[in-house]
Length: 132
Image 1 (tube, rainbow, N blue to C red):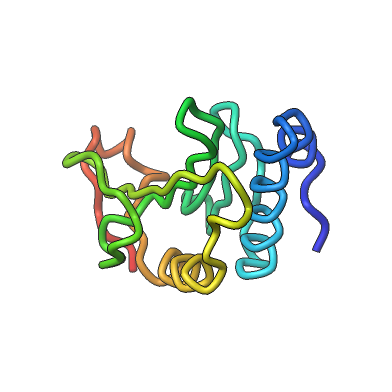
Image 2 (image 1 turned 90 degrees about the vertical axis):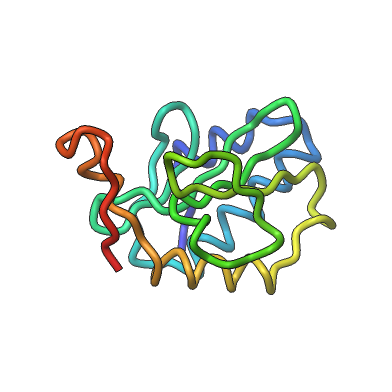
């Protein structure tokens, strides 16, 4: 599968080590979720299933933040849950060698199976409902 051109451009704009992290993440996400739609959303790459955001990454001070919108319910110790209101969880990477691809594959499978409805959060006035 070919990585969407906007995402390739985003990845290419990163410094070399972080570019490699972004490229590996995009490749893994695209290969594991071939039916997901991807685009630049709120200035960073995000993948959607049926219009619902499920995974994305962004450049932050601490490195590349890989975020799963419903990751708080994955039951995975490797993901950091920061908030209480939303169900997101994330992990930071600064080098390709830090990425455990087996764990990433497991998280991506859970991202497909465990979803909260972020697509309609505005319509529901900030209330999340479980989809799957």
